[in-house]
Image 1 (cartoon, helix red, strand yellow):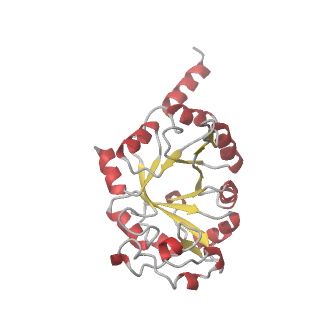
Image 2 (cartoon, helix red, strand yellow):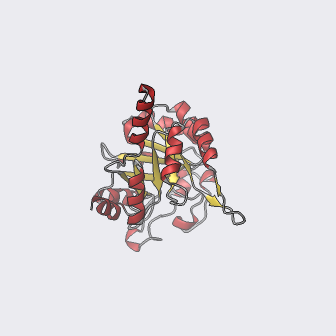
Image 3 (cartoon, rainbow, N blue to C red):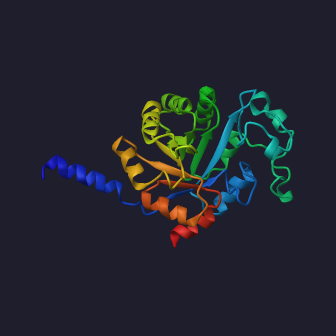
Amino acid sequence: MKFSTICLSLVLSSFATPVLAQMIVAHRGASFDAPENTLAAFRLAWEQNADGVEGDFYLTKDNQIVCIHDKDTLRTGGKKMIIADSTLEDLRSLEYGSWKDKKFRGEPIPTFAEVLKVIPTGKRFVIELKTGPEIVPFLKEQLDHFKPNSKDLLIIAFNQETVAACKETLPEVTAHWLTGYKQEKKNGSWTPTLNEVVAVLKKSKADGLGTQGNRDIVTESFVETLRTHGLREFHVWTVDLPEDASYFKTLGAMGITTNRPAFIRKHLAN
């Protein structure tokens, strides 16, 4: 066997080796127990021993970055305001906790800065940008001002142009492109295809993939093929079933995003 062949065999075998522990990320905070994307949910995530928290961020009319999943406030705020058409003061006129439980009444919509301040040193802050690349310069301003350790940050986005802008503007911060999958009813095919995933990762210069935890798609061969095209790491979302967590652990996911961090950590530890 030639030396180059031996090296290739060693590299490929390393991809098949499951990692011993995954980063457990609390999806929108500990959102199974607390109102999503609130400071209460993020603080509870640390009590539940999460390694990191994931929050969703939009840009307001007055160029403030706020933490909320939907493009409007109806579901969690009780009254419809479009985030992009509202000021921070407008959005702060609502409360975002009582829809979950009356004990959380009065929770405000958090700003990016407020969420950043409750991230303990050494914990991971997963920043999902829900907009196009227009948010990136304002994110850079925040990071330049507060100067968090870039190793504690992970930017994620479904918009490939947003990912590309992050890699250009914030090259020191790891960024993953996010994708889910849809199945065609007529022929059963899935989109995006594996080739399309590869193409987006290369075009956006993403450091990794944030993939929906779909076991029909994300298989050992799927991951190995992506790695041969340069994929360095991947994480999965949103995984709340213990059998799914075990499956993605075996595939070598660097992180598992879940609504139930304490529950999933206990299962994986056992």
